[in-house]
Image (cartoon, rainbow, N blue to C red; front, side, top):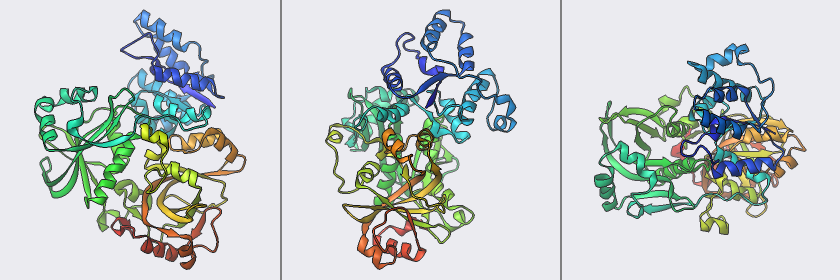
Amino acid sequence: MRILLDTNIFIYPEDDKVIPQELQDLLQILSKTRTEILVHPLSLQELGKDKNETRKRIILSKVGSYPQLESPPDLSKDEDFKKRLTESNDHDRIDNSVLFAVYKNAVHFLITEDKGIHKRASDIGIEERVLLIDDALQIFKRDIMKSKPISPPALKEDFVYNLDVNDPIFDKLKQDYPEFEDIWFPKISREGRKCWVHRKGDGKIGALLIYKIEDEPIEGTPPLPKKKRLKISTFIVTNVGQKIGELLIKISIDFCVKNNLLEMYLTHFTEPDDRLVQLISEYGFRKASANLRNEEIYLKRMIPDASSVSAMTPLQIVNEYYPSFYDGGDARKYIVPIQPKFHSQLFTDYTGRQTRLTEHIGEFIVEGNTIKKAYLTNSKITRIQSGDIILFYRSRDRSEITSLGVVESIHMRLTDPDEIMKVVGKRTVYSRDEIEEMAKKPTTVLLFYHICHLPKPVSYQTLRDVGALTGPPQSIRGISDKSYQEIIRRSGIDERFTVH
């Protein structure tokens, strides 16, 4: 495997001499795996322009031990690619050239902390191959550890009054909102407002979401009508790479569903290459208004009206209105068998799952945090496509359908473990060893949205009764729309979120 390092990961304003511990850990892990670490020659040229000779000498000494990417793909020869990314200065040209190396498969992954590069990667569809340091740590730890990587302390529900207002996570809020510390924070504490909070190993807050239920109009331009909604008052994630932001969105959506709230919103001072906006936009938050303080109001609707989806594809519907999804006749339906081990890792919120001891001392199973997940199979099935419905059948111990997903994309008959790693990126439950074993046969990767768990799991005997199965499923198999509709009827799923 070949990894391209952006030289910006070695530049830390608070300390230009010591490499941070997270980066040290990552470099040590990569050095112990079959990984070729490279830097782009244009990145080195840019460092060479630094007029601060001391800083330049230090940074070049840190990256000088890594070989350069030889004969990198020439961006100037691909006019179509150049049109997809803006380029207003030399720095943009270099960033685009670095991304072009990933796009042209000169390397498998790029590791960078540059928010602008992550935004550009998303614009050209290679975001799963452009990693933060923490992303890379979680992926590559599996290559040298038999057990799951240790994650930050678990997310817990708590009262705002139990938070330390002097925690560094509140520093920017204090700058943006002068009334935050003396007025707003004491007020919501006295109201008994609750939050979901993640604390790091040192006790500091790594992620926080403060929420409330409202039933009132939203003042803004334009104003939004009175409606019962979930307001996300504060949404901050500083400890990136653990999919905690995605987990917070998932928990918020589940809260809305259980409390009959069909809209949620937040206000935010949007910044260039804003990570929060990039995250929430993936799950249907759209700018709907702006308030008197010039904060954008991002609104998410969870149930579409009929006119809004008439011209949308099944995938567009789930992108825009998740957890609503299309399950009409144009979407094929499949039963997907999954072993208990992988079911427990992939669906950590499943009722009755036996938790690990480490989770009770504050660790995450990171892939369980995600809304978008990955499933690997050696099945020879070829008809499955984006927007199709997949019903997960937990084999061996339960023999029942437990969960429902919608296919985002399919990558068929892969045999190169490195290529599989590129595709599954940040979503996989599989270790490097497991992927290598699977790749001995052609492997198909399903990337999918996890929509919900069935309120009433559907047993093997019921599946036989409705004609969905004739025997225990050994690989992915299609079922008729009639069988699917009967499964849904018996499962007790909330059909307000189904689009026909």
